[in-house]
Length: 179
Image (cartoon, rainbow, N blue to C red; front, top):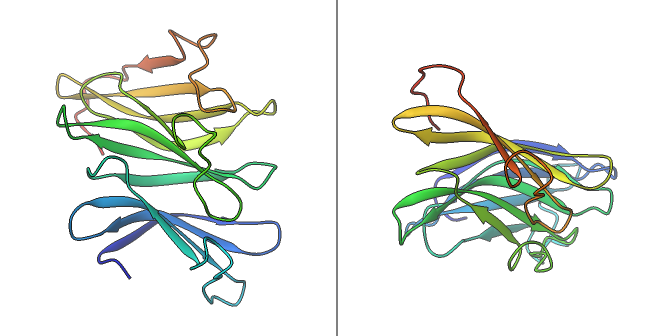
């Protein structure tokens, strides 16, 4: 529907619905993309009215990598969002309601965006039993890649009781791999 689409994660809901999480190239920029399919593979048009949603953060190139479904059916997606003013990528979480609309009660207008260093990315997300959200990924540090773990409250705010103001970074050596 929107150009070069890349699915990076798949989730199966309790009712058998299939969620595809990824990135869509709109021609102008890249956006987060979620598509929901019925168990027979057809588009579930009850999800956001069309069966899919693409969400842009501020007009830059954004990429979704992984997601998790909360007990209430809300979907937390992790990835990166481009900060066009600073020409860098920031780590990003986006939360959707179970019906496929953006949950504007999460973070700021549905997004939890942050920057630890020059370029940051979340590639995995998980839920703690108390509803907090953990995300992992990478940060660029002087051309080397370090791993990042961040902990967020259920409302999409960094949990400052974890690490240094909600974030911990680990240098695994002199590796240059960055997503």
